[in-house]
Length: 130
Image (cartoon, rainbow, N blue to C red; front, side, top):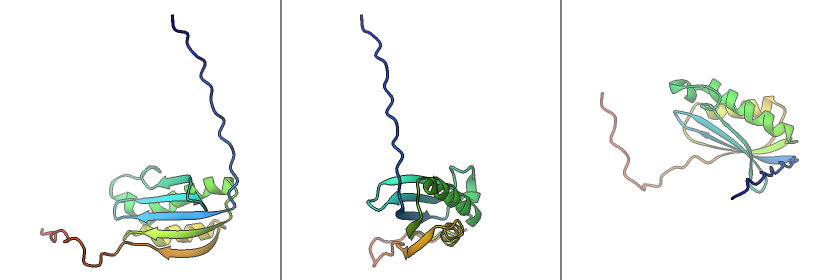
């Protein structure tokens, strides 16, 4: 007979991260915010959809503000004080997310827009006709 083994839970160690990076991906439909330490390991994340916004409301600046605030509060509990901000995408949420980070008292060292721009690569989709 097989014996049931007792499951051993690993205790999550409390990390102290004084500086890190914030990655904001603002598309037309949603805004994703990921906060990493300086090596690039994700310490917390949030999105407009995970904060309860549905449909077209996920792409708004207000939804982005709420998602950014949630992620930053989690990171501040781990001791985050200053960040580099890397934003990407054409959405409304970029500026409001950066403004929210600043309003929470986190020092912003660098703001960099990493929106991918094609140098005449793939052929774009056909224009929408209504």
